[in-house]
Image (cartoon, rainbow, N blue to C red; front, side, top):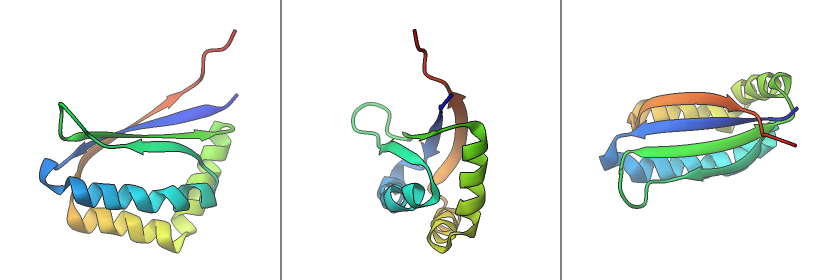
Length: 102
């Protein structure tokens, strides 16, 4: 059974451009480390401080292996540090979803 990780970000609305740069970096890092990236989604109209990401994995074990590879990836760690240094993410929530099938 595959799982999709739904990530909800609360952003500093004055630092959305930095979050978008951060998101673009993940577009190559996540697949390289084993995640099937559905995408990052930026605020457009309405609420200006909430963004989302969706990443699918074959299983929870595959997700755990991905997290371990991510911690060993130089580009991934650099992107985590970029976020910490610039403080554009105020909060992050992860929800693990499964697809409803017939």
